[in-house]
Amino acid sequence: MKQYSIPRLMTKLLLPFILLFALYVQFHGDYGPGGGFQAGVIFGAGFILYALIYGLDYAQQLLPAWLLQIGISLGVLIYAGVGVAGMLLGGNYLDYGVLDTHDPAHGQHLGILLVELGVGVTVSSVMVTIFYAFAGRGR
Amino acid sequence: MLFGIYSLVSACLFVVMDAVDVAFTEASVGAGVATVFMLGTLGLTTHREKTPVAHKPLLPLLVVIITGAALVYGTSDIPHYGNPANSIHHHVAPRYIEDSFQETHVPNIVSAVLASYRGYDTLGETTVVFTAAIGVLLLIGGARRKRSDKDDQL
Image (cartoon, rainbow over all chains, first blue to last red; front, side):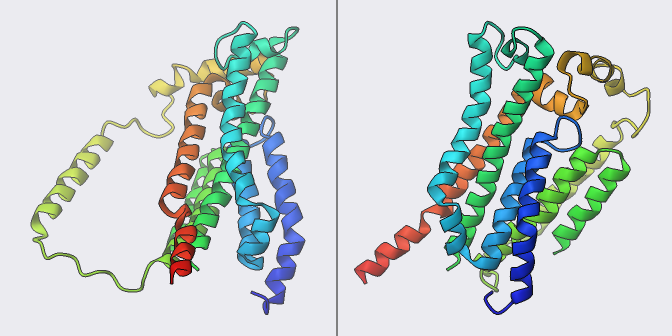
């Protein structure tokens, strides 16, 4: 892809906005369309685009495979951990109302935010991992 | 390519049906990432199909026709789209619409339902994605290391 300067330049130009948009979808999912899954996919797609244009080696320098493998399990752990935290605070599993002692609605808000974060981390890591597996096998 | 176009068209269809969250997912997963994965798979396979073992096409055809007929027969029981008398509009949907803001303070009802009311389901979905990655890694993730081992021996 070295000789195609227009895609390279456009990727460089677009990538920050793609990642920023992913973060927006992630944390604005409570108010607008979107959420952890969509944000994770967009975030992963940003890195896939980078890997497609600049090559797998640069992408793996940026986002090494071991980090992704941690991310895959970390997201599920965050999700399940929120449920366990609710249990420790005296509620049911995945009952976010008890996370904030003053206002159950705030606890719900916090719980949804954390849970969506877990989903986003897992999904984005999984997308990039699968792409690495496919692209790494091909050569 | 057709898969990507199909996903994009169905994403537009979901927008028309006012399901923006679903359309979002369809556009990003179906039209974006899945197309890249599809192309990656095509890059891994060869141009020619292996000649299959000769068999009679009648039995598979029969199975396919029967399955298709059963599915078409099943659609006659599906309630009409947008009919206000459908049972889903009377069971939990009114409660979600009326009470979810007081209970969760999340304006997007879809997020509230997905992450809070249906938290177990979403946890299950996340685990499915996790399992998918484990499966892909087990199947084709370790291939490069094996090949370099072989290269060392040669």
